[in-house]
Length: 156
Image (cartoon, rainbow, N blue to C red; front, side, top):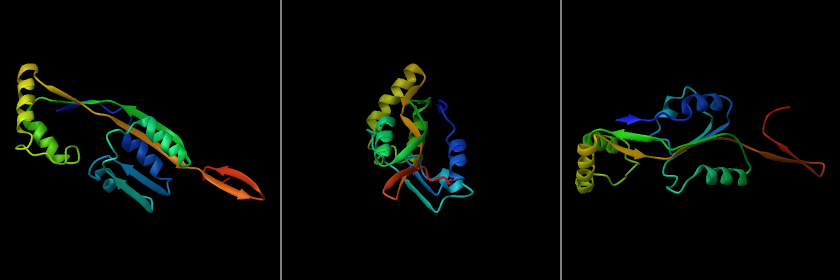
């Protein structure tokens, strides 16, 4: 199995941001290994999977901005994972069960045979996928003396 590199370093970007965060939402990044490995997490740390197949960076950014978040960093990529053996695909799908929740060899046998035929012919099969990364900060609106001020939550 060969996977193209991410356009960003999730761990590096995440750890740097988390050290100053009061809350963290980790969406659709896998089985929680990243969060579990963090030496320190904000008090309000939440993780969720299955954000939806129609999720795109543009839609997520719009939704965050509409909910009073300021976008600090954003990346989007369309990498591939190249498989050279159908057995590696079976192993992968069993390890990352959120990819195809109802996966079993019996249920997907005919598709696996098709993929095996492609691998026998071409030497590999490429599986494209979509990912994006957003780092955002909640914008707070503070009212005082009949005026409104926007704060990014930082002191000063």
